[in-house]
Image 1 (cartoon, rainbow, N blue to C red):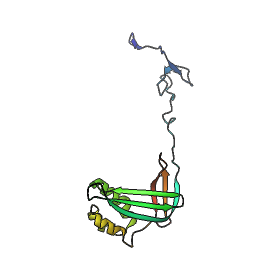
Image 2 (image 1 turned 180 degrees about the vertical axis):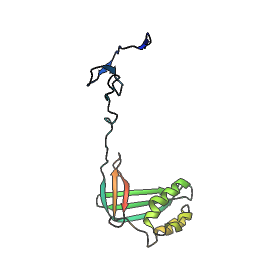
Image 3 (image 1 turned 120 degrees about the horizontal axis):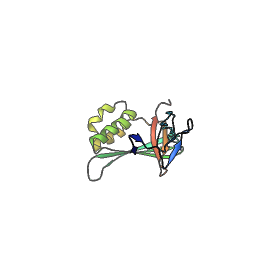
Length: 161
């Protein structure tokens, strides 16, 4: 509201400024008189840090299965750890899924990962890849737990670092 070319000074609900006691709108961030901060924009932000679990890997089982009625492979990994079992699955049905599989699995587990990049959608080549003696198993997994109590892998540690 503007009355006689001036802003109306009445507030149905207001907040008093702690510095100058002027009434301000309840949603104002700064006082309209002295410009003091009324609402801290960071007050409602929290520094949420999820609980992480460092799990030592005892052994891993790698397997490949066809995805539904297609010949696209699904790569499944079962890690046996001291704190329980951790599962990892990679679908290769799209180009994006193949790139994710390459970045999150192949490059970490194989030194010659680029040899398999062009054959990610070939189930027979993926089976051969999982039988390679150079396939590395992580020593440790850094995980969080989801709302269902299952582990989500954040990081794989291969050399103890």
